[in-house]
Length: 112
Length: 112
Image 1 (cartoon, helix red, strand yellow):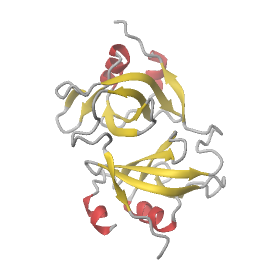
Image 2 (tube, chains in turn purple, brown; image 1 turned 180 degrees about the vertical axis):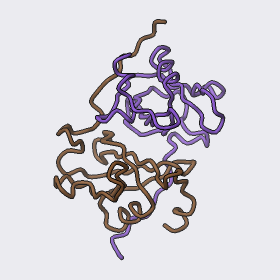
Image 3 (cartoon, helix red, strand yellow; image 1 turned 45 degrees about the vertical axis):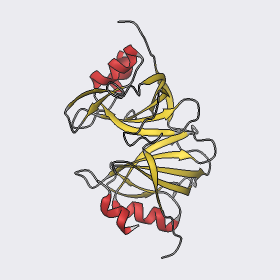
């Protein structure tokens, strides 16, 4: 864990991008940010903790709603600047009540 | 498209996080960054174009390797600061030759 942490590239705000995916369906649920402390807490406790940029503090997912994310697997990308969490989601991931935060589509056009 | 673009929250560098997922297997392949121009090009051409932070320019995925990403669906998250691309990947997504950039695991420990 320490070796991996030393390789991770946190951005200028000390944060790293985290992608959250349902371990069973493989649906992408949400994207959030982690600082080193939240990543260590996530790995230690087995439940996802992020860093809230708007509130400027740690945020255990589901601490109020009960919609916890149990960690099944944590993966790092090839250039060590993004984390993929595979989770067992209790309830829904999105604050809107949707299963996933990704529910709005952009139209694709092959025309000029 | 214009309405969605006006809602998107690009960061202080004019970039937005893009998660790339295989449309068929749902495997998360990589994470990259887009500016507005690369998103418009991606939607218009039907092939993924990103913004390379290291090279400071647009980067059509696979332009050299041939490992193009055909766009099947573009989705936006609930707070308009992350994009999910569902793609048909030619070849592999990772420059290392791996199918996905996420091939390194972090150990999870429930101990203090």
